[in-house]
Amino acid sequence: MMETAVKREVKKRELKAVDVVLAGILIAAGAVLRLYTPPFFGITPNLVIGMYCLAILLIRPSFKEVIGIGIVAAAVCHFTTKSLIPYINFASEPIGAIVAGLLVMAPFKLSLGGKYSLKPFVVTFLGTAASGLTYITILKFLILFIETPKNPAFTYLLTVVVVTAVVNSVLAQVLYYPIKMALGKNDE
Image (cartoon, rainbow, N blue to C red):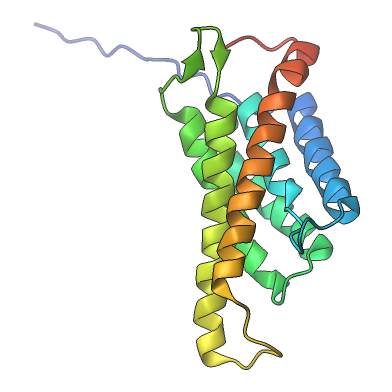
């Protein structure tokens, strides 16, 4: 008996130019919003995170592309942040992007009435939380070894993460369907 090898053609999906432009525009919009959003009780939400989560939801990039989006977002955050140590963004933003990317790839559905998906809210909330908690953890670790002008209250920082996660999630949920329809994208 002779066995024949069957070649499977694997189609590799690469980002189209429109996807790269969309991710860039959303990250830039997040940066502009971050710069001009007045603080609420001293909290300025990092809207860049919400925008890169929205980009990941809309374009469904590969894992490598998700990391690239996280690095680009980190560079943008580096220049728009008011934080003590802006370099931490180069760890926290890729982690937030990876969490968002893995959740987008996950086969779960969460919807209202079977038609209106809440996945944008959940993905953005958890992506923002992952980014924020990574930032706080690294900052707390660094403060053990370096002297800072003043020791930040970590409880306050957790409040900032939660508020930012809620703001980003609502924003992503509200923008997801109009942008998706404007791009002519189909459901998963």
